[in-house]
Image (cartoon, rainbow, N blue to C red):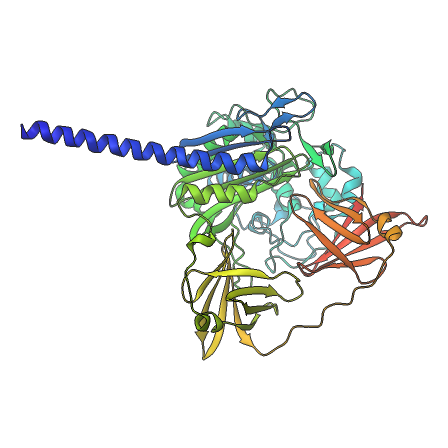
Length: 550
């Protein structure tokens, strides 16, 4: 009798547990459905999404159209150009050759390309993998737009950029670099004795049955290939790019299912030993010891203090984002077929829900007294000379960055911690050496600011430019393949919108030069001898980036 009662109660517990797990799964599914359907409309370009835990699929769906002209719906079986996610495959290929004894991470690139002009600098494979080589990235060269559709052999294309002046000495800075990964592809060919596409197919795709993955081709018939698009005022077919040019930095095509096979193989050390693959996930440092938050082919980040390994991709017509959470063994991969709809933010939001670390919502804030709120009011100076102002009005704290017109509400989660709405940015206030201080946190990036009496700089003067002149600046300017700046004029105001980003106002400081208020950046327009606008230069964060008008 007792045994029978015990069995009944045990069965009841099992049924309750199964019901709980099933309802949890349904809740996650409905939340992801809502996130994706809100951004990817049924009659527009789409997205393919997969979420897995412990190698098992939790979510696998597609939204929107895979082909607008034919009015065909997206499916999870569709094949996308993955862009810079290709860099993962390149870095693992290098590590495979390391274990084969074919190369060393400290090998200089002149071992494989003897005539490469290093100007007496030691540029190693490690520098290439970590974007710290200082070599000029060809996608930042204005002349790249002129050859974007031309097929080239790897060595011939290296000749295109190798004589460009270096941006900095090796190891001095981190600057994302497509030239570096292009060179890595050629090193793989020299060290292995076979072409990069053949290496990737035989030693990676075939080994783990990635039957829907390819080294990209514009001519080969590929079943289930997703059509790529761009968008200004309306959808257009993606800009043509020869896939010989992204090469080892961006030419792979795949599906969400194959990408799960790839991530599972990485997690289970299929290609190289654990101690070897760990090199890809190490947070490397510059010569001065500063961390770069990048390993080999993957970025290192956090979700609410939980470490992540991730990377996105952008190539004309396609955007992608993959996030792996090692401690939870959770993988999120999203592919979209338009430059206009970045999946990065929603991939991050989906990952937070899957690991039960959701982004901050106002409803979870706590109540503080006016005295507690007023304690942290003031100006804080950060190491990069940025000032952030914390103000209090009508019982609400606000944060404002110097030079920005926007006031952001910040909400208390404790007596000294405050979060921005709907994101992962927050402040931790503290007393340091007798002074108020603020730790500004944006995922893995953390900056400490100290209370200062310094006042805000005077607002930059705005000059008036006629609407007729502003109209001449309208157009699409190619900053990099798959990444454009769209300039539009509305009445007496100019606006700029970068691929996958919101539209921002531009304010005139002269007839040809404009500045942004949301960030420290400016844009200058250039005319030819006929007076036609042909290019612009974007100045931001010490970088000077020229974009030709399309």
